[in-house]
Amino acid sequence: MEVSGSPEVTQLLLAWRQGEESALEKLVPLVLAELRRIARRYMMGERHGHTLQTTALVNEAYLRLVDAQKVNWQSRVHFFAISAQLMRRVLVDHARARNYKKRGAGEYNVTLDESRVGPQERGQDLVALDDALIELAKIDPRKSQVIELRFFAGLSVEETAEVLNVSQDTVLRDWRLAKVWLQREITRGDPS
Image 1 (cartoon, rainbow, N blue to C red):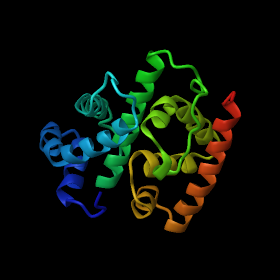
Image 2: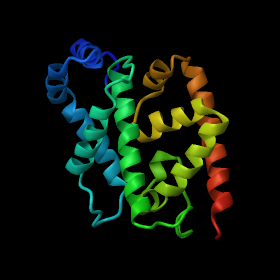
Image 3: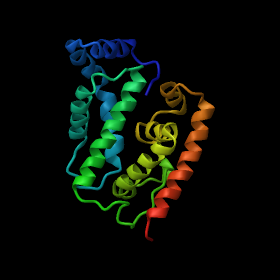
Image 4: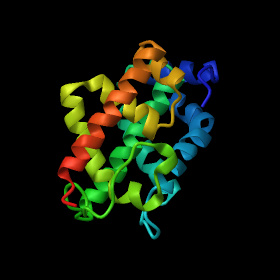
C-alpha cells in the first residue's frame, strides 16, 4: 500500500465525513482494489470451505464503513486501517457465530511471525487472537493498534507510524513487545 496514494482519496474521505453522499460513490472505485487485497490477505488464512468469500468480506466491510461515516478520517492509510479492522471484526463475528470455543480448539499454536502463519493456524485461532487483542487494548491500546495495522492490515512500519502519529522506532518497539505479550496470553489459554 502506498502511503502517498492518491490525494483524491483523502479529499473524498473528508467530503464523505462532511456528509457529501456522492463522495462515497466516487471513493469506492478508487479503493476497491486495495480493499480486495486486504480481504484476500485475511481469507488466505481461513479454512477451506469457509462460507465467506473475498467479495462477501469486502461487501460486509463496506456496509460497516457506510455506518462509520462520522469517523474523523486522517488519510488514505487511516481509511485502509479502519477497513482492515472492520474485516477482522466480520471474520471474528462469523467465527463466534459458528460456535468456535473461546481460545480455539487447542490444536494449533498461534504465531505472529507472518512467514510461519499457515491457513489452518490463522483461521482456527482468529478468535483466540481477537480475545487476546481485546485484553491488550485494555492495557495498552497503541500496542494493540500496532498489531492490527501491521499484522491484519498489512501496513508497513512507516505506514503504521503515520496512522498512529508516532516514530517508526516506537512502532518497532510496540510490535516486538505486543507479539511477546500476545503469544504468552494465547499460550496461557491453550490447554495443550
